[in-house]
Length: 317
Image (tube, rainbow, N blue to C red):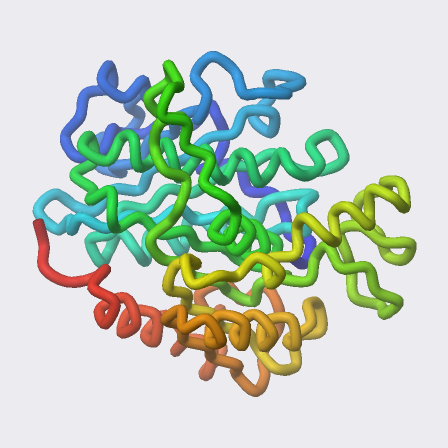
């Protein structure tokens, strides 16, 4: 959630690298730049997104696809939502680096560029995330993915987004003309890294909030703040149908409140959703894969083991 520089080298609409899984550029709508990178970017709504206001990269929700090396792929996919306080995207630290980690293990990774900021307040970021899950599921066969092995991952603000996406009501429309809109929006597993789970809960501390009368990220009316706190607080919507979840944070995180993660863990455990929770004693917010911290560098290893235990990481296709 901490403000980080917006890295557009991977997640911009103009960057299109080689199509995945041996597809041609014509098949994916991508423009090949380097066939060795195995990366390409696709707009989630080819004809323009709902409520889109402009044609700059930040106005166009998209996914950048990081495919595993040929012969290394398994049938699992993950959609990654970088953090950035809902005002920017830490698309390198919490996007590209993480996507490379998954691709090295055979998992096809989709880094999400969702709309945000005052121009695109909630629920627009959530609608982009829901569309991303539906898009990946609708295109599962093209990428050799199982429709039952699609995960959602997020860091900081992206963690709040991933959690909200996973607990939100199904948005599939069986009668839609767009095949993407007919696909399910429910992920099969969730990974949350130092998530900003209380983003919408107004507080009087120095912690940043999405919407409150102090330290605001977005200036909206008091009534709208109350609405957001009710509608977009993930812990309120946890149910037995919430997907298996892996969650990690540091106990002394000075940017987001660890208690919100504890509450989320307890809510999942209460309804018997498979959940694994790690609270490291020390570590800064915005550490990505660990950033060289002797303790935090271990969390991806824990995630690897959890994914194997849940059946999402294993034999190659």
